[in-house]
Amino acid sequence: MSNAEASLEHLFRVFTMPEHQDSTLSLIEKNLSDNLSDFLSRHVVAKRHSLEDIERDFADASMPERPEFVSAHAQKLLDTLVAHSVNTYAPTFIGHMTSALPYFHLSLSKLLVGLNQNLVKIETSKAFTPLERQVLGMMHHMVFSNETSFYDEYLHSAQHSLGAFCSGGTVANMTALWVARNAKLAPKLGFKGVSQEGIFAAYKAYEITDLGIICSPRAHYSVGKAVDLLGVGRKNILHNSDSNHSLTPDEALKIGRQFQAEGKDILAIVGIAGTTETGHIDPLDELADVAQELGCWFHVDAAWGGATLFSNTHKVKMRGIERADSVTLDAHKQMYVPMGAGMALFKDAHAANAVRHHAQYILRQGSKDLGATTLEGSRNGMAMMVYSSLHILGREGYELLIDQSIDKAQQFASMIEDDDEFELITYPELSLLTYRYVPAEAKALLSDPAHYRSINELLNRLTKAIQKSQREAGRSFVSRTRFEVNKYPDDVLTVFRVVIANPLTTVNHLRDILAEQKNIAVQTEAYQALMNFVTQTMATSAVGYR
Image 1: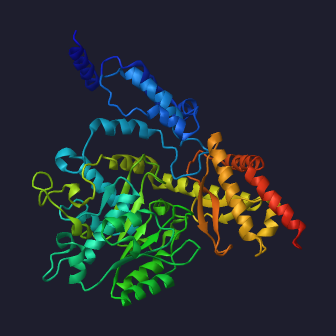
Image 2: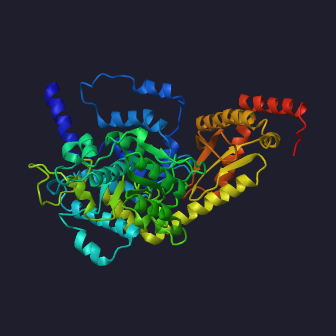
Image 3: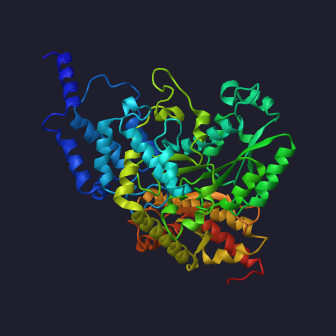
């Protein structure tokens, strides 16, 4: 058999799946199905800790010329990729908004990949199109609580869309602000609209010199990406000065009126329902009032906190979200769906028509093709994963998950507050909190205006050292971030950031993480530098130990 014939037979077997599957691949599938957590703990071994070492496994930029056996390739993936991936299933991985997934997603994802549907058009997705519309309707109903008749009219209407599935919150925020911009600069007499004539012609037609977006300094970085792409400009992101991590209504109104007085206008207020750094929630109901007074769009980025609406206990924290013109949700966060499943929801079923587009070969006028009102074209059927989760877990199941995450975060906060060697920086409004390690001797100097800046600088170095060492040790993981807090004026703190999302995480795991941080701290050079400064300062100062 010639090389060409052998290659052709190999490719045929790859596409048709031989009766006896490749042994390595079959073993991987069996292990994943039997116990994913155990499989990951055995194979994610982190033999190489530095990224530079790992990069050497992926340093060859030449194109593979010949096909290779699936068995050999699967083993290579185990040894290089899987071994040095992040074990997001580990109950001590509490640093980011990624968590363990329910077991059923493994089988369903195989079905999803096998069907390979493209949700841009009915001709490439068929039943997936009405399923996605139904899922958007279910989430829309949870957020906006409309009457059943509303969904009877608009759920499957070819002329309307309740939202758009996206690859994540970034694209969802972009989609929402895209709709807001086109609605703000809509066609009128002598002007065909911003989508036809562009941003400069739109400003001229509406007699303004700029558009601005008001949001908290804690708004997601995707807002910056959105204004960049939409031609609004990053300089027109208008922040409040509050360092309590929320956008205050008074400042939002003041900022908006001043901007408008300069011959400009406000495109949107972006309220955050669960900031990515601290988990704080803006006063959504009051911001809705401000948006109404300024005559602008009100968008709520609830990518993280939106799932709180499942909880009858905690959904009151989202009060006012139902007044938003658009809402971003991420199902791959607290709805425990695989990456990536974001959604942009629109209160008005007509709103998305501001960006409706057509193409003769695919998105024809009058069709129900979902691609007509989405930023992305080709998309997979991730709505199926959300659909299944909503049915298998139900609202009550999600409520339990949300409630226990918030409860554990509050217990963790109490553990930190009760420990003389830690300082809680932000209390968990949801299930996200920040804190830092502060030796008891150093705490005395933090109350002294003459020394707190120097102490904070040394503590910043210590926090960074602890976080890096803990990450490289591989037993647990917390992330870190930097921001200002009112307690220390004009100072920027480096702090540990913890996200309690994994239902497998227990209070004992959290207690062990604090103990590990203490043990790491005293072994660092940063700790020695801090203690030397404290000792020298105490020796020459009237400040005593507390």
